[in-house]
Image 1 (cartoon, rainbow, N blue to C red):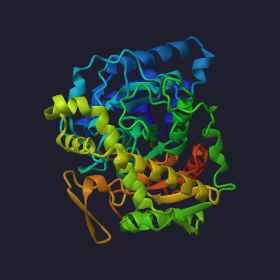
Image 2: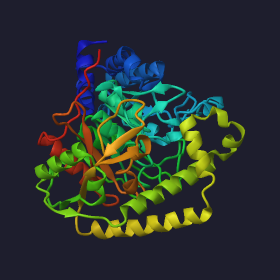
Image 3: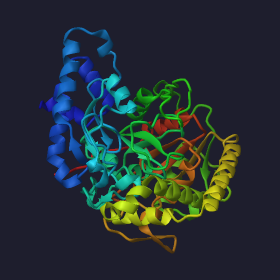
Image 4: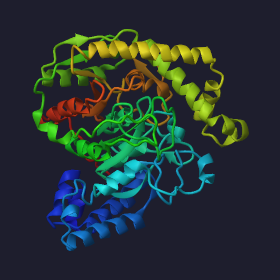
Amino acid sequence: MSAAADTLLRQSAHAMAEAVRTGRVTAEALAQASLARITATDDTVNAFTDVTAERALREARALDARLQAGDAATRALPLLGVPYAVKNLFDVQGLTTLAGSKIERDQPPAAADGPLLQRLQAAGAVLVGALNMDEYAYGFTTENSHEGPTRNPHDPRCSAGGSSGGSGASVAAGQVPLSLGSDTNGSIRVPSSFCGVFGLKPTYGRLPRNGSYPFVASIDHLGPFARNVQDLALCYDAMQGHDAHDPGCVARPIEPTAPELPRGLEGLRIATLGGYFHDNAGPEARAAVARVAAALGATRVVELPEVARARAAAFVISNSEGAALHLPDLRSRAQDFEPLSRDRFLAGSLIPAAWVQQAHRVRRWFALRAAELLREVDVLLAPATPVPAQPLGTEWIAINGQRLPARPSLGVLTQPISCIGLPVCAVPVWSAEPLPIGVQVIAAPWREDHALRVAHALEQAGVVCAPVATLP
């Protein structure tokens, strides 16, 4: 491992790609630096469940050989030599797709990479491993009883969030500059908030989900984490494109976002979501939104109607649809489930069909109300989590005088938004508190560019940032 590669690993993915492109460092040296950082820090963080060292070095050496041969197409790859890792619900050729579970360990290894991994490899990125998560993506803390909890790199006593906790923690810990996660009820945005990194939940239907283990097909999203907005956009752009094997993936043209970032706030109407999103946020969350709004000059406050009912609909849909997927194993192997997810799935299997039908009606109604609001404004601001990262094992949190169960309440601000499929960029805000907290930058469907432009403007102004955690 070279000193230059080790230094680059703490910088941006686009800086790494440029260094490989110009010959200042090799793709192999970057892969070795990432693998060394994982070895040095993962006993503390516990982000990785599998490290694909042999594959990473093989892919990196192949890139270096193509560069050595003068291949112009390789030199132009946007993520040339950049190490990344994926939540262990993505199919990785040769690895069993665990989805955070014990039960799936009995399955054969994946025969091929999922399409998003294939697209990142085509963009020059190098896979270094698979990441810890809540079992079957049903949770907000990544306190996985099979693999152990993932710890927050900024304070290992605290949760990294979930269910994509390993994805957020690996980026915050400087193990990789990019990672992939999934978001059904907030599983990208909660780890982004807790770990102090950027995360993007694209529009529902934007990225294909085949080649990943499902949770709730009618709500599931896949998306990237990064330590800066340009990297987030480059990674997202590389993954865009229709795939007919996912019936939920919409056949839209690729709409690159990275070239749009320099436009900043030009022409964008920005407002803060009040009401429910204010009442269910603690003081740190409210302060973070106020700071972001002030930096953007966003003085307008708007409300969505019946947000609590929309969240209840998300609960019913997630619980019932997830339970139906796992019902055969609940009947035959209940003892092999993580206890927290098992109990939720069992409860979901008892939900009456009429409730589910009504939940979908509420969801549709709420989506129409959000569409009306997004004709008046382009971007909405809201807290990502009601509180910063909490100590592992926390059972209760206090939000404005209410004592609430900690694990489900961490998604109180994210669930209503993912239920209706809007694109969201979570941005990390740091204050006098020792831990960060995230703000959701929410846009209209298919306008990821708007959310990313606002996030980039905030980053350029120094209002949000994602430093690498200091670890032993």
